[in-house]
Length: 226
Image 1 (tube, rainbow, N blue to C red):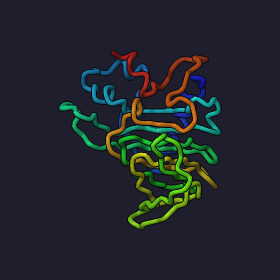
Image 2 (cartoon, one colour; image 1 turned 90 degrees about the vertical axis):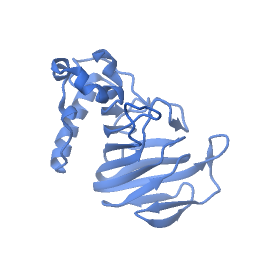
Image 3 (cartoon, rainbow, N blue to C red; image 1 turned 180 degrees about the vertical axis):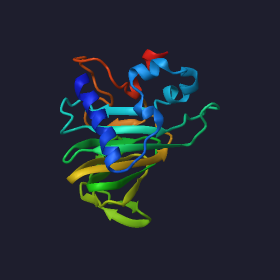
Image 4 (tube, rainbow, N blue to C red; image 1 turned 45 degrees about the horizontal axis):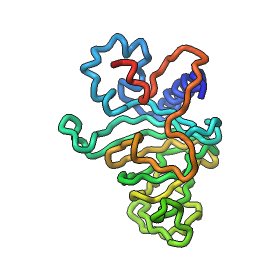
């Protein structure tokens, strides 16, 4: 992705949050200059747990088609005395017709919610022992406490206000239809470095072409602050 696109997407994400009347944490508005002026010891948790903006094209090179805008607001670290939270929270912003490719998490259970906008569409499949999609077994999931049986590859639609619980090792692919979707994720501890398995090759974090100065640091770029 180009740096200019990342800067633009985060500018737009701030505006969208305001449109939906979602108040974001202070660090969501830190520019690079803001970070350099802060007492970083006081913000070490943000850096260590990679709280903040996460803009990705999943290594596909076409963010508008395959991509996602995330803001990690809370997280912990497994086995850490310093950061013992067992949960994480993220805001998701999904453009109309923009997809997140099929993947599962080895350890993390998560709820994905449609907070407003269009329809959040999802396709599910269990992972087999070879980490491929099991195209035979019907999946039973909980949508707002209601048991739902879903066939592999069937499209499940979450209307605004609805949410689904996804257990570990359940492949999921999702996208927005009819309009932009403001999504939300509430989950166990999040580890994007080690706990994502994508069915098709790609990258969790984007390669960046520096075509203009950095305005907003991604959560994967905090090493420059150390």
